[in-house]
Image (cartoon, rainbow, N blue to C red; front, side, top):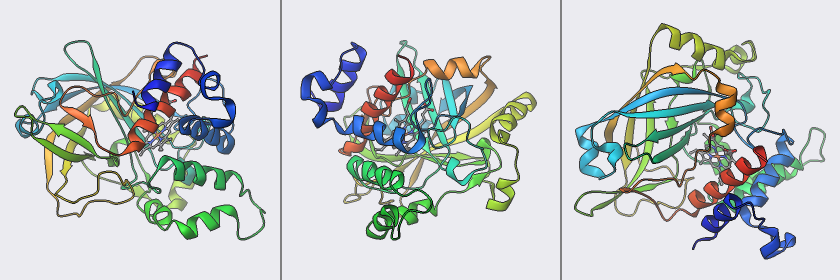
Length: 326
Ligand code: HEM
């Protein structure tokens, strides 16, 4: 059993990892959540990252092309209900939606399949990730925590960024949208589609809106603190929001375990179908507490690639969930 699966099982049964491996040898998932708590503070009841969000209801209708790529029931062509949560980055539940720190924005989707199971997709508005591994992400967070305003120069963050050029490159790909609906969201980590004949294809998700609208930092700073959350509520009273789900198809040799390396733009993007968002759930704050989106919660026909970050993410999300629902 892989380590993250064991971690999720332990959390589910209310056991602690420390009792098994000793507190000095914490698993990377725990080190990551602890590092997030260090940077963002501990906010009981809230997610360690992407603490502020809004939950909405949707349905997904797959394209015929999707069924050829993956045998997943999700892609069979019938309409599948889904729960979606849009979010701001950071573990700060009161962050201003227009703050630069609220980027990247997140979109988490739980598709409710006909057999009663779920398959999840947890994506954000970065085009690629700032670092390649869970260990590097921990080190980036720790460097951030060790570099408050006024820290002696070069700060630990400056040193980390100088040796990891993918950090500024990734940050340059994001902006503040004028609406959660006017943003594109990326899967970043690669997944494997398995079709009916057993054929395997590495993919990266792209969730594309009707249009992308980004504001300047000055415009974003002038917005009310909750403008993205409020705008989504108002927009859905006027009508549904549409997204187009695509899968960028890897060619032989494209890296599947380095999320800092986007695949070439000329790679085909297959049309997987349309996601239609209809309404805000009646009590979003209560709903989001109970929701746990896991990047590794997948139905038959969709598998994790060889990128270990997916498993580490699932372990960290489960741990964050157990801490916010003690
Ligand atoms: C090693 C890398 C990563 C770690 C350790 C990590 C960790 C976390 C944690 C602990 C949470 C809170 C989960 C909860 O309490 O339910 C979270 C939320 C989230 N993360 Fe990550 N993350 C990583 C990479 C990514 C990547 C690559 C993406 C996008 C492709 C992403 C998108 C999101 C989103 C959208 C949420 C909010 C989920 C929700 O609405 O419940 N994360 N992350």
